Image (tube, rainbow, N blue to C red; front, side, top):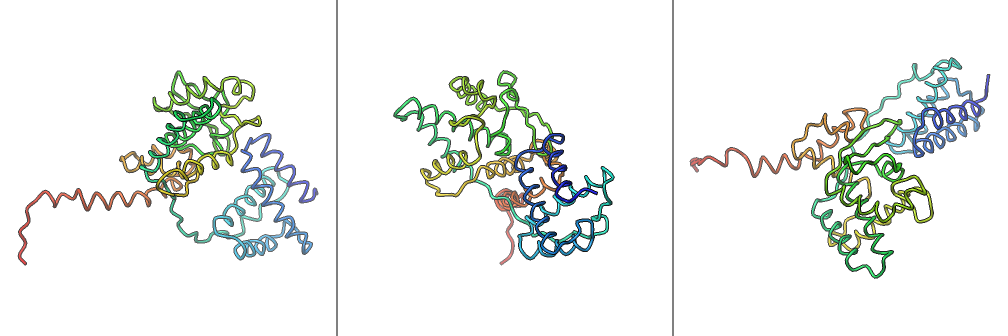
Length: 308
């Protein structure tokens, strides 16, 4: 039988070239499997023994936050499922209880007035830019911020967006999300306009690199550069709020819920495989429910002269 290292490399190869998983998922799989491999080697344990895996899971709970443990367990389950499907070995996870209570972590969102201020600042940057280069960069920044906020796409999906996956004439964008799942999103007319201006200026780079958003160093845009850009404009905003690219996604979902959009419609827009993932935004929108019940309550339409 092959060694764990050989099985690990084969599994990662299939994930990259057959399943076409995104780079972040591949990196996480590699890190998680290397950590498990180091644990096995430290005590010369067999990766097929149920007790070895069970003991390893106990050490994970001692070292990592619940969300990290959940991800590392998911990596191991995917690995052993692959071994079972290829008939290399039985899946020991069929005999291991991995369930545990994970604390509810509410998504963080950006107040709409802060997003409005950010957009205004970027637009002002275009007007006051001291050079054509800085003007074009502000044009690019506006396209990125508006696309993030208006579609709720993941930062990794935006940065690695192939040039041929966006059709501005049809007002559509094709996204290949987690697990290579494809979804087609309609674009707001204002976003189409911003993207069109950006495309006109950066068409040569787009054609050369093959990505819609390109890096000044070549290749596709990086999530670090987007974080830096957002931080730059956030420092100029009055709110002094720490904003991450992923918070635009949370804000997008929350805004749709507060406009009474059915959660089953929001789910495929965000590319969630499970409705449970989308349901976490209902907790965030509970503040809107409180506001409605306090300020729009039908009882306020009546005149009630209750005795003192």
